[in-house]
Image (tube, rainbow, N blue to C red; front, side):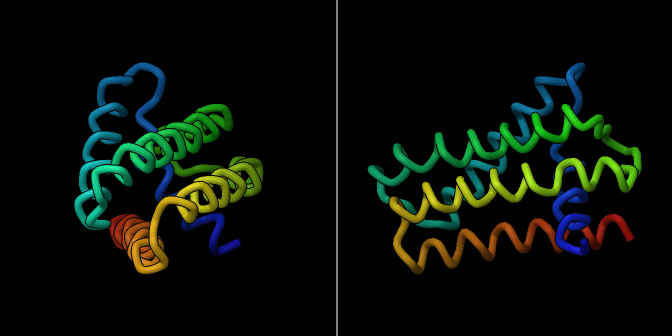
Length: 126
């Protein structure tokens, strides 16, 4: 349950709602650029990994929108439970796809980036 809540908090910050697609796209670009820079990707890895990371972010944002998450509003337990499995599956898919492109050291950095974002969102929420 704690992981679901953490994932939801991170994801809430990502969701800008259907009325603010430009803000969502801005966030996607910032996250992608920061992630790519920290992973020290080769040009080939950038070409292969960037679309996977972006698709994962967009997929998770859509899952949250479909569940009725809104920026600035606390999600209900029902909403959290509804997104738990689809969010986990999306993250697992993205990680599995990236594991074929990134080195083990880069995967470790990627996981660290994800965890740092979760921690940052939790700290901002308290």
